[in-house]
Length: 580
Image (cartoon, rainbow, N blue to C red; front, side, top):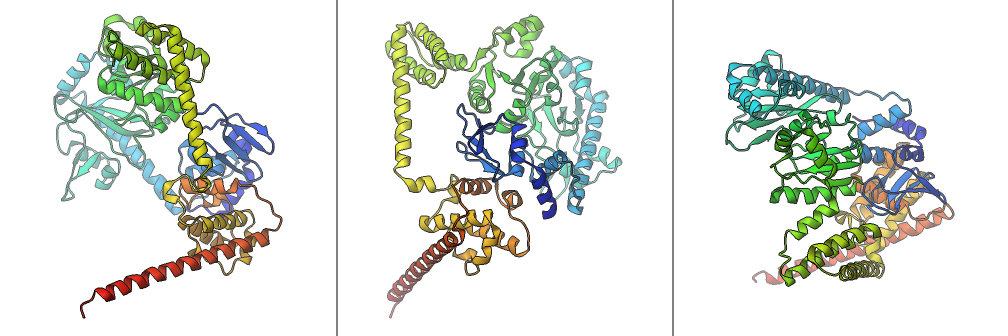
């Protein structure tokens, strides 16, 4: 949807970025700017700032930045149009409608309706004689009829076109089924049911829409689990199974499991806070989604090597968004489902309440790698444990976990404390060295964070940044830049932005970061925001612009001369190589 510039300007005029950001994080005013710990990455010292005069935000830690629209896109995981809609609603404005937008919304509504019909169809199949093996499987897993109904579980017949025929009777076309990911097309263009001979788990979003499906085989066929592909209404990296139920839980925590059955079994056992990722590894979007509803996540992964590796990875992702992470240590059973069946709900609740903190869990995993009866391995264990403990910012945590590691290895506590101190000094020295090296290479400091945006001609790029900063601050200055063209820029991004700004100025349109958000990638908007963080003054703008233009054009001539010389050298070499 192409949103009119006049509407974007109205949204911007009615949106104060300080008010907007403060509804998500607690801001503290220092000088002319507001500061907070960044909502987009984990940090203890605030590096996220909001500039009310420029109506933009920037994080000096993760280098994300932009205007109000960019902030909503990042915080809510929304697209451009959805972010504008959120801000418009907040400002009491009615979103303009366009044919393209209506068409997209109509498609989404049709896919929601199709998925709902498919879920009903699969659920009805479960009562048929052909689904006896599926009912037996669910019974063997100990699932009650109420649980099956609550999760809308069903069965896909082991046929190539059963769903296709059923949905055709409801008026859905081949394209509808392909868009919803319910069918697969072969090389000849013929379609067949994606899910066949499987127990079906509907995937439901936070608003109660059926957005996709998961299916489990009833034999040894591979893959054991099959999931819907990403569609216009479903993204497996942004949704969690059973989150629509868990978001209402009063448990004060979420339990993250490895799959559908683990989650469903926990819900049946009375733990309505269980969720699972959808056939993909845990992502930062998953973590952010959980962080909206809880402060604590308990990992209930398998205890095998794959489960331990997944837990270690998940700890880092969850911690980065500020979640407290604990790890369930299931003893006497292979998983939470079996534990509840053997020992009951009360025993599992006790196990859950006593789940290990992530540091304790990681220390235990380190300990399992070594034979502590051998001195050489004991030394290696203590050194690796000290590296982990040295990363902890809290002296109390270092005291507690250092004592545990020393006791496990049977060494003097002071020796462990000394090793942790040594590791902290070493880490601090390495960090200081990195900062010193960076400080001694100012060119590196001036380069964009994204490698693909790096400058080739630093002198020209600095002048190009100056032109962009000045004209974003005052577009009327473009009247003084008639002889400067985008092609004269050395940076592809800055030349492109200059071209956009010039075109918008000629058409009488305003130019702010929010106006550019739909036209540029997030990392490009962030880089422009970084440029705008530089101290600026409106004094002598015309003189500064003239100096910048002179530098850009001078460097452009040098590049052209160098290119001509290179071309001439190639021609001369080829001429000499030709036979006479």
